[in-house]
Structure formats: C-alpha cells, structure tokens
Length: 270
Ligand SMILES: [Zn+2]
Image (cartoon, rainbow, N blue to C red):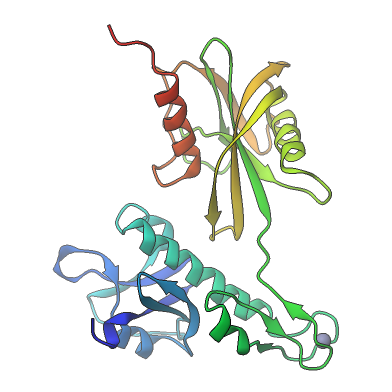
C-alpha cells in the first residue's frame, strides 16, 4: 500500500460528505481532492491500517462534475460498514473541534492535547492552557428497547420524525442520575404508556450523527395500556411477527434487535 492510499481525508459540510460518483460508483473523494476542498485536516483515528482525517469544507466551492456533497445517511447502504463508521467519527471530530475552541470556564482558546496522539491515537482531548480544564467529546447514552409480549407480538412505535409508515423500537436519552435500566423503563412508560420487565442487554452502537451511544435491550411487557404520547411517538401498536410494518434500515441497531427476535422466536417449520 502506498503512503498516499494509507491516508483518507473526509470533507465534511454539515451532515454531508464530499463523494466521487464517477464510473457509476459512490466513494469518498480522493485524498488529493479532499485536501484541495477542505481546511486543515483533523486526525480522526486508525482503521484497517489507514489513517483517517476529517476536514471542514471550504466555503463556496466550485466542484467538478464528478464530485458532490451527499447526505451521510444516504451512504449507509452504499459503503462498507467500517467506512460508514469512520465517516461518522469524522463528523464527530469536526464538530468537537469546532465547538470546543474556547474554554467554557475561562474563555481562553483551547489547544489539542498533542501528547495523547502518540499514546492513544484514537483519543481526543482539548485542553485549556490557562486553567488546565480538559474537554473530551461528550457521548450521551441513549437506550433503545424492543418490547415483546408472551403471545409473541412486538411493540413497535412510529416516531414523529420517522418517514411515513416506518416503525421501530422505543428509544430515548438517559437522564442525569439514571441507570440504563431506569431510563429504559421510564422511556417506555412515558412514550407509549406500558410497563416492562425482564430487561436483557442486547448490544450497543455508536450513533455519531446524534453524537450518542445507543444501548439496546430486549424486554417483556408487564402491564399498562398502549398509549402513544402524541409528541415523540405518534403511533404505536403490537405487531404479529408475520405482519410487521416498514422497519428501520439494516445498519440500525433497532433492525438488528428485531431480526434477533424473529430468529429467536421462529415458529417450528412444518
Ligand atoms: Zn480555562
């Protein structure tokens, strides 16, 4: 592998990245193009032996026909998962650098703690040279809960911001002082009005576009009447396994939980 191909530079603009669509495929633009269309590169991390950098797009770019900005979410289905993961990190790194330029306590400009790059290449810390306060990226935890009934039906809900017809598991952010279990029970109660029991950890997934960490649980219904809150959840229902609504995309942890449920609770074949 050449020196140049071992480095990838992602040009970020809002929630979009710069891609090259020549030859009928979608890929990140070349390192050379990225360095021409972005500001100073920010180290993102290492992945598969490659050094990844992110750079905010320069304003008012005149791009050649084969290059264009593309919503990062639209790339979920077009690029390998490891690449999507690093693009997510690139967004988070650019936002962290842009939002922590000054110390929140004494307003002095912060600097990147360079020493950490050699020790922990994926760690990211900014430090205030005046009062020594340090700033790490904030990663607010969110829980997502897939509730099932003993009769085999699944509770799925449609969030107010979902595309029409799509349903998913219930999710929400953990509040100060709550355990993950507390948050799971509160969110389900608040958003759809039912009580849950028998919480079982499933898996977790970083969610860089909302800058959070999703922690997923299976749970069993324990009582209460289904009653969407009408604000965050506009519709919710119990679904039979063979009559599921439109589900979230395969890359999402919600979809993986649902697939896990379907595989685990498959009826005996005849
Ligand atoms: Zn300070």
